[in-house]
Length: 209
Image (cartoon, rainbow, N blue to C red; front, side):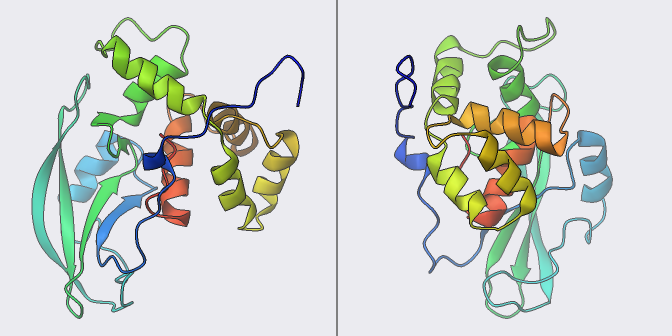
């Protein structure tokens, strides 16, 4: 550790608690839907978001159960986004499918969150986000990335091996986001989105922010 740098703080408990293994159903993130135009196209088709199988019992028949509205606060584009749920025909597990551009638990889109945390400064058209909310998000990004680093290292993927070699064990989550964006060549606007969706896929319940 550098003498000029203190270790980053431990993440908030809500960021590092995976879902219980007994949980049946939950939230899935479609990593291919990164913009609203693609979401509008997919949501019009009952098969647009249908999972290939139930993650609980691996049954391959899931029926469209219902639609709901997710509100996105301080979103300049679509403050109301329609999302769908599918029900497993075998075990009755319900799966809610979110497009990747929605930030779960934050009630914003990821481009809104990124604009006020990673951009310098946010664009003038960006709707105002309360100062305390921005501070909370920034605090989470400044917390330790150790749990995420261990999660990614366990995949054995060569990309993550390169990322981990460029970071020390006291890296922050923001440094991990930057390193992943550089290695995977993610452009500004989708950098938080990409890493958050990947984290959820590898270990549902573990959160970037």
